[in-house]
Image (cartoon, rainbow, N blue to C red):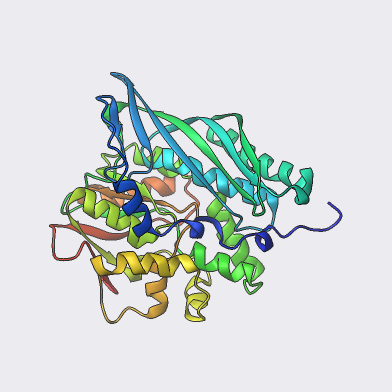
Length: 350
C-alpha cells in the first residue's frame, strides 16, 4: 500500500456497535414461522449464541454467523477481531470450532492488498482455534464488513445455554468491559497507544482458554458479552433462566481509560440503543455514576464469557483460569437470585 489505509474512516459504526436495535430484532424474529425438529436442541427461543442440531447420541453441531464493519484501522487486526468474535459463539456454548467460511462486503476502491490482510488476520485466528477455513462469499459494498459463519461440535449433554442459572450461583466474567467506548476514543484519535493496544489485544484474544477451563467445572449456563452489552446479555440469561441477577459495579474489570472516556461523553450510538430497550428491566442504584451506567450498556466486540457456576466452585474456577494461562482479567462480578421485580440489579458495592 502506498498510503496507510484507516479502515474506520469507511465505517459509520464500529464492530458490534453496528448491531440492529434489539427491539426491532425481537419484533421481526417473533413473526417468523416456528420450525419444529426433534434434533434441533437450541433454536431462537432463548436468544442463545448459536443454533445446535443433534447429529447422534454423542455429537451435536453448533452453527453461528457474525460479521460487522471495522473497529480497527489496521486490516490484519480487523480480520483477527472479526474472526475471534465469530469463533466466540462456539466457545460460549461449550463447543470446539471446526469449520469456518468467510463473509465479506468490500469496496473495490480499497484494492486487493487491504482485503488480503483482512482475510489473513481471520485465517490466522481460525488456525489458532484449531479449525479449518474453507472458502466463503463476497460482495462489493461501499462500507467494508467482514466476519464468518462457524460450525462447531459439542456433546448433546454438555451444551451451555443461556438458560440454567440457579439462585445462589456466582457470575464470572472473563474479559474487561469498555471495548465500545475505547473503540470510539480510538476512532476520534483520543486514545493513547497503550489504551489502543489494550482494547485490541482484548478483542483479538480467543475465548478458547476460558472455555477449556470452564469445561473442568459444572457450568450452569454461559454466553459471551458482545454487542448487546453486559446488561443485555445478562438479561438474556435472567429471562431464559427465570431468575434475577445482582451485579456489583466495583467488581467489574474495566479496560484502561474506558471510564474516563465515558465521562467525556465518548459513547457509541449502540449504547443508547441498548439503554432504550434494556433499562426498564434493570435496576440501577442511584450511587452508580452516569459513566459507569454507560459501561454497563456499552456494546462489546469480541467480549468475554459470562457464566453462572455454583457458589462453591466460583473461587476455584478463578484460580483455575489463572493457572490455565488466561491473560485477560477474570472476576466474580455478581450472583444469581430468586426471580424478583427486575431481571438485573446493578449495585455499586457488594
